[in-house]
Every structure is written in structure tokens, then in C-alpha cells.
Length: 106
Image (cartoon, one colour):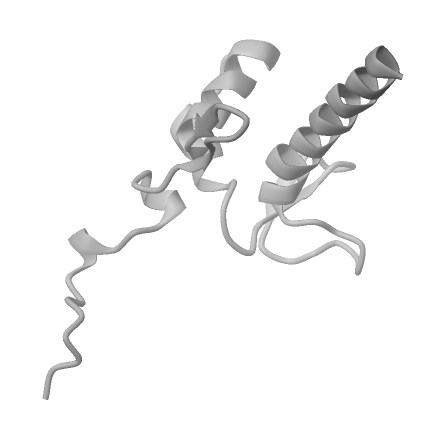
């Protein structure tokens, strides 16, 4: 019996495989985990981009105190690495841009 879905791993779409992009056509941006990892490497110094990109998706957390990645949340307020390194910076950027636009047209 076949479900009609190919279970071959080579066809699986997943951000950690690098075959998924996050995008906003309205705002004109697009990125993959690897492109975001490259941006961090360019900004904060050279490190293994592929290894960092792998840690940006899934149930992986960044412990800021120990400066290490872990699969176990340090506490109930811990955020997954995708939220810590990608979503929160994007939210801050959007907030800043929207506030500037608001004050400009006020």
C-alpha cells in the first residue's frame, strides 16, 4: 500500500537541509539558514557557517551564559535558536523601521 508520498530522504524539504527559504515578497527579503549564518559570520567573526546553520533549526537552544548550543532548554523561558538568532532580530528591525516611519509621517 502506498500513501502517494515519496519517503526518499533526498526529496524531503527542510530548512536544515538548505532547501527551504524564508521570504517576504512584500518587504523584499529572502534568506536560508545558511545565508543568515553567513551574515552572522561576516559580522561577528569567522566560524563554521555550516555547523552554525545546522543549529538554527529544530529543538536546539542557545545558552547565553555558557555560550553553547544544547538540545535541552536551560529554563522555561529559553527560546529555540531560530527565535534567538533570527526571529527576534527581525522583530527588532521591523519595530525600528515601523517606529521611524511612524515618526516621519506623524
